[in-house]
Amino acid sequence: MLKRLSLMLIALCLIVGISQQNSKVFASTDQSESINEKLGLPIVVYGGSLTEQQKSDVQELLEVDQHNEVDVFTVDGQDIASYIGGNPNSRMFSSVKIIQKDQGEGLNIEIVSPDNITDVTKEMYANALLTAGVEDADVKVASSVKVSGHSALTGIYKAYDQKGAKLDEGRMEVANEELNVSTSLAEKEGLDRDQVSELMTEIKKAIADQDPATREEVEQIVQEQLQALNIELSEEDRKRLTDLFNQMKDLNIDFDQVRNQLDDLTNTIQDLVGDEGFWNKVSSAIESFFTSLTNFIRSLFS
Image (cartoon, rainbow, N blue to C red):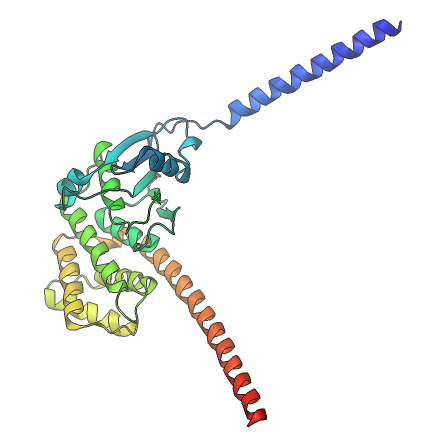
């Protein structure tokens, strides 16, 4: 009797174990990612100068293993020359992952290695990509070494081209120039990258509202936005801005189509600027307190 009971207990344990294994298999199957037949596979573009180890690091940063399948491309100096007329000998490290979204979902940029992208912010990427004609996508940017981040744009251009959604060449070139101007202005004394991004966004919104017909009208918009944001630039930098946005005007880029995304971008930038301003005030108050305390202590001994 005892032997029979023992056998029954063993059998019961085996049944429970098999049942649990089966449930795990089914759960794993349910959680697997299905392929979006309408929008296509996620796209990963690696910088052509990456070593095998660096490429492996970037794969981890971009979470490539989260997807059952991805379309993979490599971008190099020849692509820079082809898409934006750049230096064909350029070394390319910035890499990107792009997941296309339904129309109206907007553009979401994430820099997943912020310590290694030294010059370009996600707001700068967003502004430039809207100029280039990229509107609805999740974009992750990564590098395993410190780089400026400019070449990521070329990787995105190549991804769209290879997938049959070729972007306008003129808009790509202007978007690249926009990124160059933005990062250059952000290096000026008294300006930070968030202020530059806000300036670029507000000028675009003003162009959408006013629809300037001449270079002089574009120049007036630039000057108005500089005054509104209390930004002072040299005559040379004001001319660079006017030249840039006059090129956009000549390309007939309709920023009304992405007005909601520009508004969202403005709100994001203003939140960043506000947070920075708050902590600057806290820092200033702490510094003032300790200065007063030091002066008080000195007065006790004088």
